[in-house]
Image 1 (cartoon, each protein chain N blue to C red):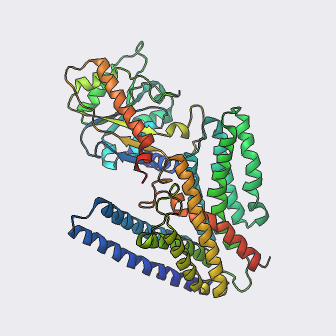
Image 2: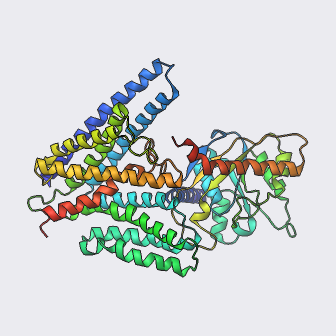
Image 3: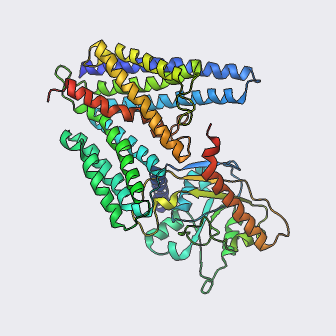
Length: 321
Length: 219
């Protein structure tokens, strides 16, 4: 545990260092902007948004750091709350209505706490199928009992999708704590740190590469800011960073690079998929709670898609049970 | 003293609960959150409407902003009386004209003269149908006419009807927003019907803007 804690502190110090550099650059850009009042409004808002994002990063890093210090309980509470906030945003954009009231109440107040309780009790056999099987069968029953058939399949499917993305996928982040890896006892929290750092730095680097070199848009209809140059540059540089973080993982440097590549690819596609849903619903952001970023889902989209894949890759490759 | 502490605690608990369920956010589109005396008039689809509006006001403005609510509902039980009268300092009006003793408009002007702002729901009752807005009752006109200097602010509350549809007990967490429009223009000598139509229109315009705003800002 001691070794784990010192590694964690080292990693947090590294992230803090990156944030300090980002803050200095952001403030410098803002100051420079003030001197040259003639700059376009678009440029000013990009820099304002950049600084809002950096400030939000500080808050998020502090929160995650505190959760890590709180151990298993801290991590489960943090991601339980993230699931709640994400589900709240997702359901807001669905076509659900009065007749889904019982199903939605069950999703928020029974299924969500159950899933995290199962993670707490480390019941792998049940938390892996609880939402895909039991919630999948139960919620349509509740919706059917209310008797309305209008858009029934759409409403039921939307609710299940919301649960899969916001609760099932998100819960695989704290589930990393339950893996039993020989020689890695008591250090599993570093797997969470690794996943979050690699996937989020990939998002940041895609943004940076995209702003610097971005020319060809990948899917203009889905996301105006995703470019080929940004995606390739971001994913490759995040993979490199992932390889360099091998020392906090049970992987070799090469394995670590492979894991980072898998996570960043999943993360990139996650961002694209959740953008498609937003565009379909005609909104720009999922929410407004994280200044500069949008909603919880806007910030977590890449983690949501990579977490279950990362969890199972590690479990099949390294878990002893 | 005890009661004041209790009502302050209850108010804080209600605000925290409202934020947890709805993550409510304010859009000050046509005006700023300033401490001028105002009449906020909003759409009404849930008993939680004024709670949400009250929650997004800055703390200093909450102290001086009183919701106008139906006495028949908020006198129903000791708990409702405590929340209605002590926590929110509601102006309780009798909605049924047959057996009322006080004139609602007189009660409201009295509260305005004491320096407070008001939250009113000119539809008069909760809108549970499919129309966006029910026709306004005339109270808003008389109130506006008797105090022409007080700003009239249209306020659109979105999504709360989905959080707690009529007849349900458990609220569903959904993101809600409260949009504040520009003060309604005051036209001297304007008739009642014209005034009410204009007030309805400016609130509906906010609703349309709220529904379509994200499409426009998408770049």
